Image 1 (cartoon, rainbow, N blue to C red):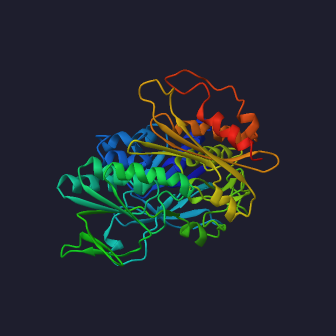
Image 2: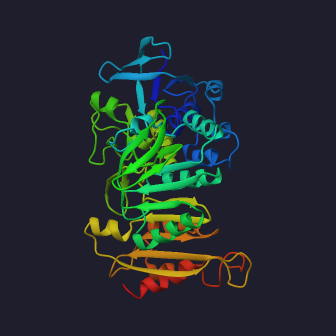
Length: 447
């Protein structure tokens, strides 16, 4: 009798696990259960589809259910796992017709992802989260039917990207954020440049305002968003206030949930206390290499890597996930944003003593066409000068520089070492001293 690997969740982590397991063991029986109609899609690309930069939602799908099936993976879409009995090695599954079956397994990968965390306000239940391809298609269809104004609740990555999508669609767009700044993963002095870029594109940014109600009309659709002191008309509303890991099923089955709210795993993606059970992706914790604690950072990069490691180890491998440092990039209108490691605020929250420096420079040689502003902020450890974090905001050519800082943090470089790093130079790409080198040199003066 062949061994059976069951996977709960058919997106990045789940199907990465399935794919590597299939390559390693051609005889392994693999079954994957996915609640929605699609597998292996790019949720990060949804705002660009909604805004029209990507014309066809199908282009967000890297591998369809049928393509997985052709590779010998039994993908069952529109199937929800209701319960997991880890002792008996059985899943209770309900299909689209409402039929329930018991599905056995020998190895299990939990890749249930994350779900929208809307604010607890009246009317929020009327807003469908645009987190899946089919939901994005429904939102785009609603936009095609018309409307003049939109409101985005939340000013993080998704909120800002969706606000830009609405502006590209020609809508009068308001973005409401309860915090005193946009993009809370940045320090306030860097976030102000992102806010300015959004406002320059016509997005109305309202900060320090809590939404009290999403007002709905007779047909149940949103017509306005109300704060304590103002009512904002809205033909379309998107809630971008973050997401929480989907762990209820796993927790009921006996898996441990960590302080981050995600499932506890070791560096092999194994769930403690349960042989042959793995978790990966947005529902699982990761070890933060700078903060030295478990965190839940929901990014497709981590999900794909963790899923691959879970699938490899489920088939007898011995791979480990080395952790994360919170590297992320985004584009908001003409503004590119990157961050890695820890911010000054995160250092303060973790009671870590740090020094920091911020510089403003140009993305290219000043005389070369297309040169624009770039701001770089570095956070370092006093004494040793070890680089702990970096933030970058600027025009085209700014954001991917964050990868140099991520590599430096990963390798444990000090800022004086970074200041002398042999980076490339040509006028179309930077001045003779790259902005990162200038920022490192300024930070080194403080350590």
